[in-house]
Length: 347
Image 1: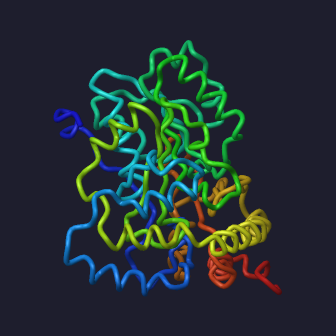
Image 2 (image 1 turned 30 degrees about the horizontal axis):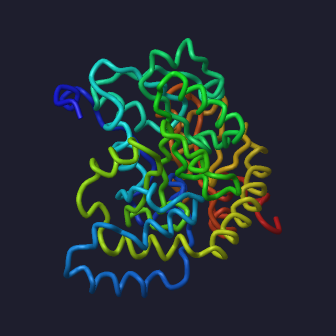
Image 3 (image 1 turned 90 degrees about the vertical axis):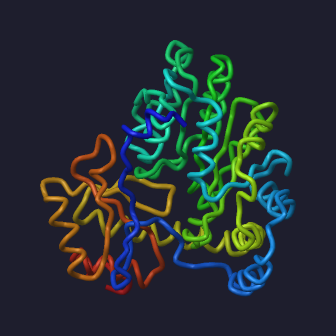
């Protein structure tokens, strides 16, 4: 991290509602957690009287099985964002450029700037078409799939072709798959290319954002660099044990995917009566409120007990909100808060 950049770079806004009296639709986390998590956590808490085993063999094996790679390629990190930072720290320095999609997760540009590098913004719909004339000048490129906040997942073949072009340009490709677990699409970890780094977050899919568990996947010398650069004891014992347990809960993942797909379709149909809603492969929907005032719409929902995400904080968006896809009862409360309760289940 560049010492001069730290003094100039600001923090960026995120979803997540601190008022526990509000139903939080601003953060895209699963409202359900796998059965048995509490028991695993309790046992791990007792084991936390000692330092964790820094090899994290059980966690690496579970993560590798989940994304389809060799356990040696897995780098444990305290959350997906920690994987993103570790990746960018390993490839960027002052004066470098990095291809950054927009509108997308605001931390990408911030993390690039923290290394003293410069983000080169490209619309997320055009990112995978970027040619070598641009990539040759970029030390890194970032892809978010499904993209946050728009929700579209990248076509795996197009992503593989882009990874090849990045490799030809000696450009590191960081693929953020924080929400890919909500889909049936394959991980970019399958590419096993030395220039590709995959960042994964466990806590969204398994409904435990406060646990801070995630991992990176890469190969060759870059894998060695990330393994050397990660902090010692990079996962606490509860995060490592609960994370490994969750990653093995195949039935829970399948049920979550089915519920999200069904509820997302229902929610989108209702929201389209009032807003322009983007198609999505993710557990959230981006809504254009049109001529309405965004802050008024957010305040209106809060008055009804629901927090939604102000999406105007994303680069390139000026009339949008983002709403998470929760369970049926919670989604009905969202629709009621937005005055669309006659389109709730049975309405």
